[in-house]
Image 1 (tube, rainbow, N blue to C red):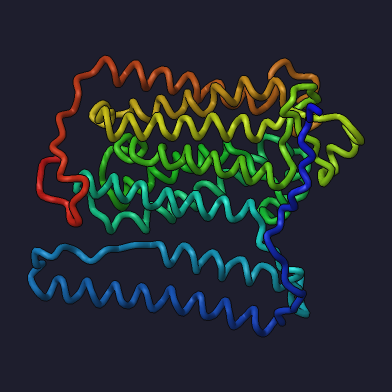
Image 2 (cartoon, rainbow, N blue to C red):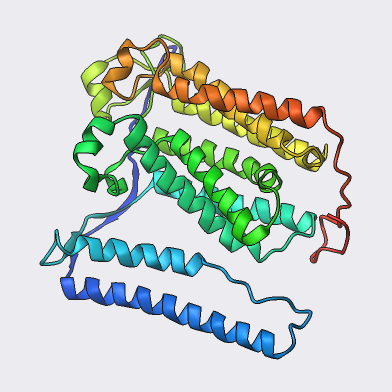
Length: 364
């Protein structure tokens, strides 16, 4: 017998826990602890700077002025305090769920951190930049993706309910907004931490982002969301756990698993970019890896959108939906970056031993 569909009943949760409540007093205490950590971190930095200046600025270098702790704990403190007016008796958390989507995010960022760290060590770049870069990229991804969804897809609703913009836990992230957010945050990282041209960081960062994109689309698959139109192809998926599928296609119509289509494209792009970096030294042409990334991410997105269900009703009357329209500028930017990189002379870099435990000296 030939099976012409896949019945996808994998649940999005890995496990759940029972409900519990955090009281208002506990919320204030947690916010105060976050604020205290920021203060202690800044005090420690101030003392380190004073010692460094008192010692005559030794060769060990200036103490690292990382804002990672301040960004993380400041955001936690602000979010906790913001919940108190609407939850005067405390906030109930439960049932707590660890979801595959979140695990895909975490796995992607962990693997990406290791990949970029290896590239930095290969080129003798400062390893202490990595925590700051992780915070910048994570903040850009989440904030940008949330704002992108609000502005590009549901501005009518969020303009009337601006307090809901920060409610990212209710769902609604847009990859194009995340891309814009990462671009802005990488520019900030280079301005305040690395002091290098932004293209230098982008060329070393985007292979990891391609892998993260692959894992996020697999997270969409586990969530039974962002699937495609009906199909009779043998690899069609039914999504009985999806309310959208139940409304449009139940009980026996299979759909294009567009999450897998995109995940496969992004995984292939990841391997291509890694090959370009490690085997072809493509980073000697600034912007080349970034240009290929833009083309490899957003051109498949434009094509796959033709068999994907629209996210919002207003897209039904559009020749190209919002995702396709937002992808076009990135594809054009990618073509320009590739042309620019290939028509300019190579930058001749001297690389240390990429397998060494510590980077050797050299010109970078």
